Image 1 (cartoon, rainbow over the protein chains, first blue to last red):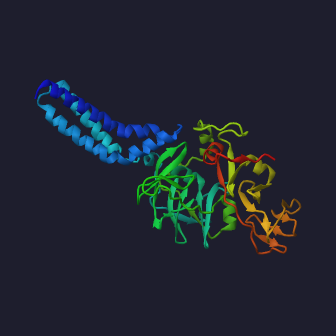
Image 2: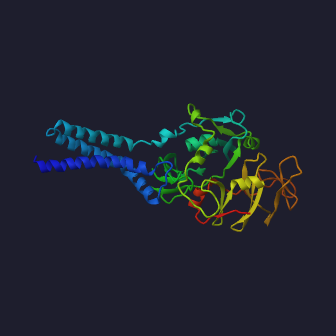
Image 3: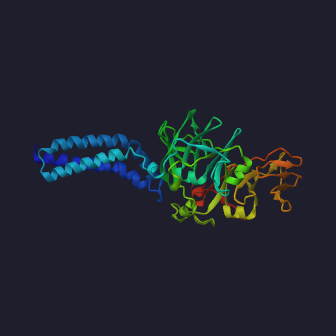
Length: 163
Length: 229
C-alpha cells in the first residue's frame, strides 16, 4: 500500500465515522423538546430517522473493514484513531435504534383500570373522558401528560388516548 | 383522542418525536409518522391518512363520576407515580413558546378552546369562558353555547339548536341545582339533555373542541378568529 492510497482510506474512515454520528445527532438536534422546528428541518430529521438504522449499520461495517485494513500499518496513536472511529460508529448504530423519548416518558405497556369508587383521585383532578356504547372511561390528565400515549380498546373500539 | 384505525388496519402508536412542543407518534405496523394534534400522517406509508377524532370530555373527576359512576379509571403505572407532576401545567407555562403569533390579542401560551365548524375556526380564551359561565356565539353560521359546568371547571360546547330552530340558553340563577333554561320552556342539565319541558329526554348536539395553547391552535388553524365579546 502506498502512502497516498493510505491517506485516501484514512479520509474515508474519518468521513464514515462522522457520517454515522450525524445519523444520530442531526435528528436529535432538530427534535429538541423546547425548540422551534421548521418544516424543512423536521422533514430532514424524519427522513434521516427512517433510513438511519440501515445506514448506520452499513457505516459501521465500512469502518470495521477500513480499520482492519489500516491496523497493521498504523502506529499506536493511529490505532487509537481507528478504535475511536469504531466506538463512535458502533454507539451511533445502537443509538439510532433507541427511542430515547421513551426513556424520558415511559410508555404504558399494560394499562390497569379501577372502578370510579376505587380511584384515588381528588374531586378537582381533571380527567379525559370517553363514552362508547355503554362503557365509560376516564384517563387522569396528570398521568396522560406524562405518558402522552395510551393504546386502549373501549367497547371493542380501538382508540388511542393522546395528551 | 383518536380511533386507531387507518385504511382498514388497526394501529398501535408510540411516542416518536416533537414538533413545536406538539408530539409526533409512529405506528408499529407501518412506521408512519403522525402529528398528535391533527391526527394526520405526515411521513411514511400512510402519509395523507387521517385518524378519526373520538368525542371526549375534559372534566373534573367528581363531575365525571357523578355522570358515569359505573365507569373505569386508568390506574397509575406502578413505579411511575413520582413522575406524575400535579404542577405540570405551571411548569409548562414557564417554557418559551416555539412559535409566536402576536396581533390577535392573545399571549402565545394562553389556553384557548378552539372550535372548528364549516371551515371556520374560532378561539375562545378559557379565562373568558369560565368567567361568563355561558358564552354564546355563531361559527360558520351555527349557533353554539360554551358552558361551564356546576364544578366551575369542566366545559362543554353545544349546538344551541333544538327542533330545527335556534334556542337561547341561559343559566338559571334562581335554582339551587345547576341547570340551563331556554326560550322554549326547557331545562337542560350539563350533559346537554333536557330534564323538563317540550324537549324532555332529548339532548343537544355536542360540539367537538380542542383545549390548546394559542400558538399551537393558530399554527394549525392559521385563519382562526378570536372570540372577543
